[in-house]
Length: 151
Image (cartoon, rainbow, N blue to C red):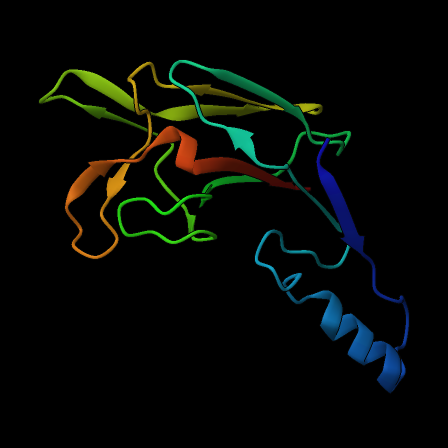
């Protein structure tokens, strides 16, 4: 199950204190995981395992189809110049036509779940080496996938 958060600001004429509250409600949550604001509800999954041709289904708990979705991978063991905790926003699905293989993943979301299907290549997440920009494949076990959604 995903973590949910929401913030609502006062209605009508705001006092100075209420105005400060309203301003703070429009700010990111601080960890960059989700943005919350007036009447916005967001969800963020726990870390999910990346596996060749694997499927991940996670309930987001929003009760409606989100209007925004995103995904990122987070480094859990140093890999290709990335440090533990680095977040990498990567292309969902790409095709390496020179090697005739697919990388990435598809992401489908409905009113209940995020559903991810990873490409069938041994290392489905392609990226670049952090320090050089050279093309590389990330080691599945060194990363976790996080899914976000907002209504």
